[in-house]
Image 1: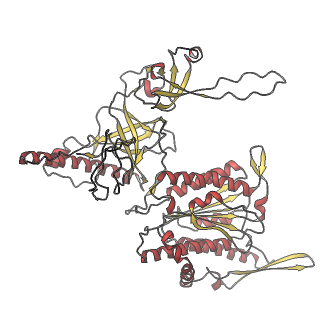
Image 2: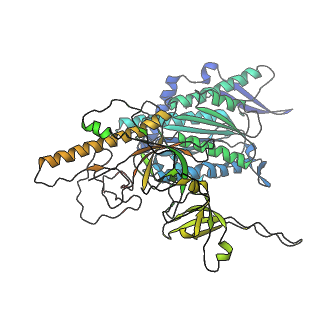
Image 3: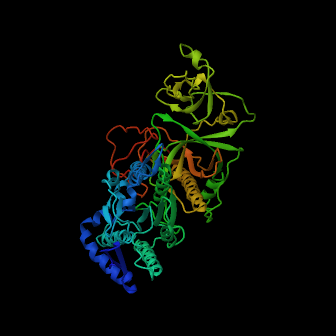
Length: 621
């Protein structure tokens, strides 16, 4: 898409091979918007068969990779040896970006993997090569071999980039016309890596060279801007990450990032080192995650709501992470005021701190379920002890705060002499064995006699120990008491809100809504009782109390974000969900015993069920 902006030719002369690079007239360098749109529309006619697949996608990642001859150089430090630049890049691409994203999308479920697209463009000579073109994201797990050669020309690659973005937008337009449910916007993330300046910059003589270079840079920047505009100029739905690999002059890459509106473009240098390159890919992976959109979640006036990274719970070992906590509740008189019809119109500031002093919370390290809007975790509440202890016997409550120090004691049998008195750290609670998993640090290495072969370093040991043989020594047990016998569940927003105010409002609104519904349910039950109806009408009630928890990691380390939870008691037993989050009611009768769901004590209702592992809270009748 687009007219040529320059001609390039070579000729043999008595002094060697000479190159000539001529820019076309300035009005031809960049097509006007009307011509560009018309050409893109004609090109998109070849994509009509792909409209059903492409129009419903929510994320398009485009990797533009330098495949010029310099990428063959084996000068990238990898431990004690060197690898080629292209091998280092492909390894970092798989380990730091492709595979983590695939794991994240698979855990998200709900068709997230099918809504992601991946394109890979190679910069080489006068024609860029596309090895993946709006392909399903999982195609990136098996990229074909890349054989660097020739020059790394920016302009053909950027032209293909702009064409891909434009064509995809036209497919989305066609999808809307055909009645498909097309997301409001698609998030486009571009990774542009080069180990040198544009090879398009060829000086043809001593006169006018500087102006030619300047015009080539302008053309590069115009193509970057064109790609951004083709994405619909969604300010928070487009990202460009430019990476300069090595120690060249990366002025053009910096300019490409700077030409976009603030916050949308970034430049990152990467040394010729595999670890540095891997860190760069991990950073880009984070960018992709934080700009990911779903097909049903829009901005709501505060920009798009993007998915929060989440770890799935280990089904065999349950571990907790501790946080300092500010805990809030709905005021006790809320229900009374609701039943009197005294509803407040205030949107914020209705909840109040929970009495009882300082608190900490322990939250499971992984989520055990999720619904349409929240991920669900186990949670325990702790309060500060009146007097700190030096050691605390553990019990079988299965609360294992990962990393806390414990001492083994009271063991009998062959291993007693070796283990009793040893200090180790908690790993988690093994439900099927009713034991704690602990990690025993390896003993110090013994001296090796001169001339003897080296011995392997001793490894840490994982042990399963009964609670009665463990004494907790860490502050989270000795300074805090976990006497609250309530099993709580913590629901965290699945998406990252644009600011703290919206994050708090998301949970406060849920607290007040559920408290209001609970008060109205009590009013309904009393009205039914007064009527004295001959039919048996079940009473309806909501889980209480509900809490809002603002949690700060116990280490208070910089860079670790606070977390926010809607908290309510866990509902045990076998339950069926009769209505979806969108108001549909499941009228299908139950003809067989209800199977349990271990995640939360509920069951998945057929056909209309939208929550996963329900039964962790809400209404029960």
